Amino acid sequence: MDRIMTELTTTISEFKKNPNAAVKKAKKKPFAVLTNNKPTFYVMSPELFDEIEEILWEIRITPLLKKRMASKKPHIEVKFEDLMDL
Image (cartoon, rainbow, N blue to C red):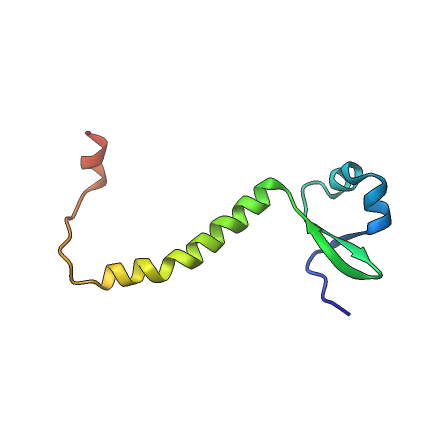
């Protein structure tokens, strides 16, 4: 059996009857839609999707930032307060 990655689930039959009711019932928590007791797809709020996208972006950008920080290229130190005066 496939692993279900959420606490909440619904069947595809119930979801197809009234998708909006399923979303409302979940109260912004992600849930799996099951077909034959296996996850077919997941439903999540736009806010959670944005949060996941942000985490993925950070994972992708971290190696580049580490490489740039290790670089011997000259850099200019800037104080945050100095930027506020602009």
